[in-house]
Length: 413
Figure 1 (cartoon, rainbow, N blue to C red):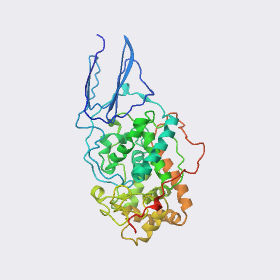
Figure 2: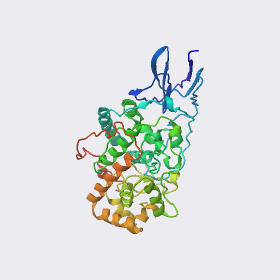
Figure 3: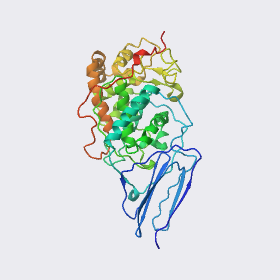
Figure 4: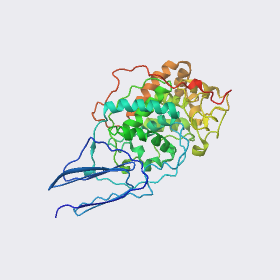
């Protein structure tokens, strides 16, 4: 008996479509059902018919049944949409800091290995265009910190002791699935996804893994930071079962801050210099007590924004990327500024202190080491297609017109 496919879809009255890559190939006599957010791509082929591909957007429940001996079930409840955008929270938050657990649903999507489509490299021209769109987004929403955090948290799950992809974690786009968004350290990142989803829809031949890292690097550069030597072509995971387990990201206030930082970042293959350099990115952003339990509800530097008001920042000009973070956490003279245990330890631990003192005195050295560390972090665990990756710029160039953070008062008269 010929294979039979029955597909039942329930469509909501309001949808948030997410485009699927068009450059995917599927073998004969196989079926791939891939959900990117709330979109479903269904392909079926039989021995008597040519392969047919349909891209169906905005489906929140799909049930697939087969008469073949090896059925695959894909169930999707309308109560567990991948992006719960109606549950909004402030747009800007800080980096690698447990922000508490949001109220998000967990998907039960399942994909068989034989039916997984091969997603090819992102399109270079679309990457370039998306970068320009991200720059405009930054100018209008001041979302630099949360976009940096988005890229970091997708990549920061990497475990160097696991060879298999995607089990090893890292920059593979898994953070778009609600099961990983539900991790405590990722609270609030649904807002970052909401911000960049229109860009993903516009440029469907860019993987989520690339878009997350493109947004993160662009945010650093547009805030006045160094040019990041990035490469692209990261392959996306296709199902929530490929997300890493919770607990791979750093905490803000562990009992032993130095040991905790080393446990987490050494697992990624990073060293003390890279730990301190990456910590310097806390020059951007704010902590919010309603998410993490850290910081004040507002300060004189955050009560009026820019962007969503509130929270406590590490620096006065918390949308400007420079080395002021190191000066502020060492001096601890401004009670309006935040210093976490994992910040203070940079000047307490003998090895960390060498680099923290250096970056306090020499911003050029900080920029150089930060750019290298950020690029390394963005590549962790990634599978590239082509294997050598895609470089958008032949050589590092000075960033274009940047967001002028200094023109804002940051609560001062």
